[in-house]
Length: 339
Image (cartoon, rainbow, N blue to C red):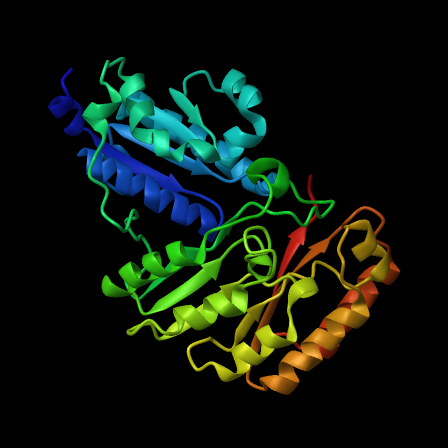
C-alpha cells in the first residue's frame, strides 16, 4: 500500500466524555485531515474508527467500553481498523488490551500527536517520519462545536487531589498553557467565526500557578477581552476554593464575561467535604454564593453534587437537601458516587 492509497481511507472519530476531550478530538481530526485522510461522522462509512474515551467514573468507563464493543461489531462488517485513545487506555491499558484483543491500537492521552504514525503502523507500512510530516497551520484543530462557540483548553491535568477523583492519576498534575499560546489560538478561533470562547480545564481558577507562580485567570480574561470580534467568555469550572474577589469583580464588571459560574461543590456537609479532601466548608461555600449574588445579582450559578459518598448519612443528605432548597441555584447536576 502506498501513501496515496492510505490517504484514500476514511476515518470516523467518536468523542466521549468532557469538553476537554472534545478539544483533544478536534486536534486528532486536524492531524488526520492534514495527512490526507477523508473524515466522516458515520462509522459505517469509515475504514478506520477512532474512539476517544472517558474514564472519570464507573458510568463513563462503562459507556466507553460499550462504545468500543459496538464499534468492534462495526469493524467486523464495515471497517478495517479500530483505534482506542484517551483516558481509558491511560487508566486501564493492560486490562482493556487483554479484554479486547480485536482493537488494533491503544493510545493514551500523551500520544495524540502520534495518531497518524499509529495508523501507519496498523497497516504495517514503512513510512519514515519525514514522509508524514505536514506543514502545520497555526490553528491545529477542526472545531466540531456549532460555529459560534469553541472550547479553549487553558490547562491539562489536575492537582486538587480530591479523594474520589482519578483525574490526577490519569492526566497528571495541573499544567497551564502559556498565555501567549492561548491568545494566538483564541485569535485564530475568532477569525474563523467563533464569537464565544468557553475556557475549560479541570479547574480554571488555578490557571497559571504552575508556570507563573500565581493565579492568572483574571489576567488571561482581560487579555482575551481585547480580541476584536470576541463577544463572550464563559468559565468551566471554578472550584470554590480559589474563586477570588478579583475574579468575582471581573465577572461582574467585564461585559464580555458571561454572568455564569459553574462551581462544583460536590457536597455541603463539612464532614463529607473533609473526607473528600476538599478545602471548602459549608460556611465558605455559602459566603461565596452570597458574594457572587451581591456583586452580580443576575449571575447564573451551576454546581455538581456527589451522592452516596462513603460515610454519608441521612443527616448529611438532609443538610444537603435543605441547602439546595434555600440557595435556589440555577442548575444542579447529581452524580452517584463510584470509584
